[in-house]
Image (tube, rainbow, N blue to C red; front, side):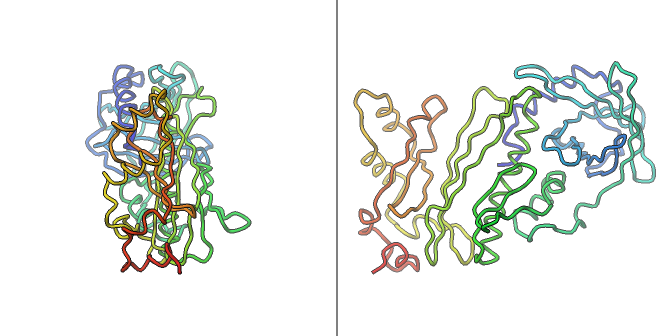
Length: 360
């Protein structure tokens, strides 16, 4: 769930910026601009700034310690780089220009100023190139962390810091987004990495959401509830519930179920446990277990929905939650639990996980 989940918002902001053009110059950056990250100061405050001439959403910066980023639209005047800072003040409003960077190259660094349009406020800007690939990892190395460093270096810089372990050791919290996630103190390094990457993915989405929200959002944003639903000698299952509002037409909800191998941290396909559980079979099981109410519109909605479910394991059985329902009928997406005993006939008895699900 990365930044590219919000393309409509990003495109509308970029289009508005081209119309505003309050900082002067001509569209697009000077030819010398390359993708990269710079760190330094704006006035007395530390900032980190990303440039990407090929992707509009790659031009943004943040103040140290703040969750939201500020988007930038590049312009040029000769060899001078002009970056137009834009902010949405309220829902449905066009972006407002809140600052203008005027920067020149100085032996690889960027020097210049930031000015608030229509005011006399001008602050000195001094930025040095940051070699993100050589930054030491401040978290345990994991596939997701290394991918993030390559795909979105600015997000990597923001999240590559020590995270907080709860007093009982059972939760891990990413401080900037405020999100937390289950942690198993005795887990293998591979499983710890997998859990860290789940929280990392959500933290990236949460920070993107904070950036998309207008200034008067009133505390909306990205909320995550993640819990262990089953822990056996070989299996770990979790359920994630997301509630978010990032400035679109309505709030969004999403549920994800995970079944992981405790040794490798890799997902365990449902077919490895029950080969007969096709998507169509899951839907039939769901409809058979769901509460039926002839007076409710949900009956028709559930019968006609696509056969996609968030699947997790619990002590009571296999939990199924529909994931294909549109927002207007999302209230119909109640979870049901299929008892493990009901599924035993179709279980893979040769699976190394069989004894975890059906102990003698």
